[in-house]
Amino acid sequence: MHGIRSGLLCLLLLPTTVALSKDIDMSACQYEFDATNAALGMRDHGKTKADLEATLPPRAKTRNDPRAILLHAILDDIYARPDVAAFPYFHYRGLVCLTRAQGIDVRIPFSRIADDLVACQDRHGTDKSEALGDCISEAVQKHL
Image (cartoon, rainbow, N blue to C red; front, side):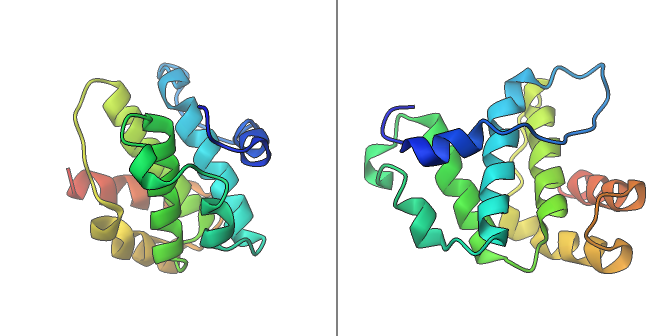
């Protein structure tokens, strides 16, 4: 993970609040959970995309660094659609990662599902709830 400044790295190591089945091995997705949680927190506390990108290696130098590629992708998503609240985005990312971790190749571009996430949060609010989680899960299933 060379090239990522320590300030962002420290935030990526913060604990997450994922509540999923204990039968699922979440370790394969822990970095993605932490990166998503940290980036959303910084976005929601006023950090700009440029502020956060300045802590990452340039895209041209990250072709072989999956963690840096992931961080750039998360920043692209959350700043392209700031109308998607933290929990809906976090839950979408988590579901997609855990599905991949179970050996299912799933690629749901955020741009394709973002409107569905906004519709879910419009119906169920932006705070974590069973109804919101179910709605997001249904949206992910629709795009598989």
